[in-house]
Length: 571
Image (cartoon, rainbow, N blue to C red):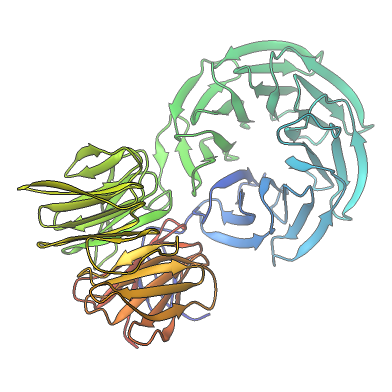
């Protein structure tokens, strides 16, 4: 692959990409399921629910490796120096890769159900794993220990009364802890004998971590308590009640505890100090870890597509400006670009330089965007935000369009339109594309087109009108069907060579159509003939939004990878 330029953060841009608005640093094309630090502090590994495993340079967030496990993942682990990478999930197979070249070294089979927890010993000799059934009590209630280099099973450690949810080696390499029921079990590695069964929690224990000297283990779980255990005698030295279910925790080399809860919060405290909590995410944590220097916390939630970094007091550390969720809307506003992510954040960018201008959290969720001069309309599950005010709707908004002071809003049941002179409602079930101008309102859904002459029942796929409302494009699997709504005539269809259609846009003169797909490509087609002009590749996840500039000279796209790309259309 040839790269002739880079973005603001030094990451390469593929051919025909003029600029990247946002960053790839610590960004993913689907939500993060787990994260892990290498003990030497140089690398971070992440696993996503859709089966992608990434290794990042810890200091900068630059991606070093990406592999596809091909299954839903729950957990990831890195060896001390980052040379070996392991991940597992829904199929119970533990896959191990060489991080130097991405080669798969082992596919370890032995678990009968899903694997929820992995850990690699500090000396790299052992890999511990635990799992069971997600929503039921399973017969698999033990920890498996593997010889990592050989890829061979070694030990089965029994005792848990439920699926194993967490495993951890002590930093000195002498102990292994496992959790899943209401107890914490600790084994010594020199003889693989169980040293302690630590009882006291009033619910399932979901996470455990050792102190730097290996003499203290800290546990947390569904009862909202963090318990600190002295392994000299197995006594509980302290109970810290946080009031929220604890799903992840880690102990720093300096003896500070970080705990992540199901409400998106992170709590930090010393072994003998008072807890301080800050709100890091909107939903449950999936991963939380101290950097080896004990000063920086990494976190990821089950809804985020990015790893976030924090100072211990909750101040964010930015590794490149950009969205943290899929970009569902893009548009042009004079010398700026506007982008909207699925978490309701609206960002503005300098069009020429790709530098960030502003970021506003306008809603808790978002589905679509329309840019009309200096104003924006944002579709949400609660209604439409127009000039900063929410207009409530009975159903989630699926499409918006504006022209001057006129606004059209489509939901599952109706399209509402309004201007300075009044408002109206036209029924169409559902409305997934709308167009409004000075004279008319047009809308379309799988049951047909309202407000103009056009086709009857339509495929239930992505829809888009041309900028003047004349053409209607509808996704039908890997194809786009196009109608001239003035005549009710279907034009030649456009077929992708890769994945299914995710989004459609037409240029101002209705000559070219841009079509995004689930594989991250943007395809260009001649509308009159349906012939392809080729594909533009640059997104690492599905394309969710497209817009031609009003003059038809450039194209922007937003995707699941949280970035916006500006494309050169000539050549």
